[in-house]
Length: 428
Ligand code: AMP
Ligand code: GLY
Image (cartoon, rainbow, N blue to C red; front, side, top):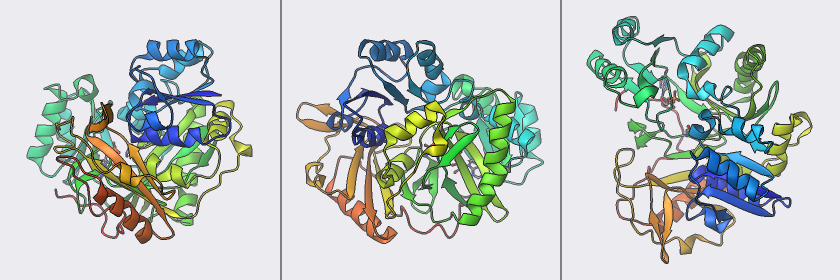
């Protein structure tokens, strides 16, 4: 069969790489892809936000299955468009994807369904948002309602920082329409865990867990990023946490979505804070995580094509999910300046020395080919995943590979997959 993967990040490289392993996959297209996806499929020059272009490509090339990577395309209704054209597509509809594209909608659902989450208020006026901050202890968390490239969450340490963040989002157009309405919520202490579930409501199957490292610098300091590395399985998850998560989060959510007439089919990725009081939902994402996918998929033994198809068909109950019991560690190499504005076009060296090992995968994110070279083309450039019998072994292998690769301005965290004993820190 012919499969189209939409997106150009490390997540999409990992998805295309895994889908290509299926005996059922004849051709893999990636729109628009990067220098890495070219090695596992054929790049197609259609951007992920060109919905009509994607539909046209799928039709012209008789694509059997399209897999949507990024949140923006889902929020714009790419799945609705594919469905209306009779094209098979993996991902939630625009209405279902509101769980991610509107934090106010997600918070409202959680409040209604009594899903454990941070105490929060939703606001359309900045004076009311500021007033609400008085009811909370600092730090407080300010969140743009809409999608903001992973940058729409500010942890404000002081009232002055809260005022600045609220003003910037609501009155000065930072994040455009996405920041006109905001959520203000209490700061939760604990360690984070990323859960991925294939969902064909009301049935779902949890994938292996992962722990992301969101902050830019070692010791969980510095600004939030899209994610600087991941480890799978997460070291802060347990059978007890899983049972609690099924009971307190998934069961009411499945019921609540059905009651709202929302047929969620796709990947649901709740970001959870493991607090002393148990798991608390920070957010719902409606697509695979990045870089979690790069850590999770190398551990998946089952055929991903079968699983995505079963999700679309609503036959998940009969699906077997098999995992490699080894651990995986993913280290992201980013461009100088990331998560702020960064330089691109820098030549990447050392990539050739990394091929050959089945336990190490170099997933490309912001890369492109320029003549015979691979050059940087974005903030997060590469995601290097290694497997090992222990986390230490996987870490060692991942960092050995990172040390062989270089580009001007490259930076990465040195503490990916170290135990999360301390929990998140409020201070930068
Ligand atoms: P979100 O997009 O809502 O997941 O927020 C991005 C990141 O901000 C999360 O992964 C956390 O690291 C942090 N964050 C969000 N909400 C909270 C909260 N209520 N308490 C502490 N940290 C938070
Ligand atoms: N790594 C977090 C995300 O994909 O949203």
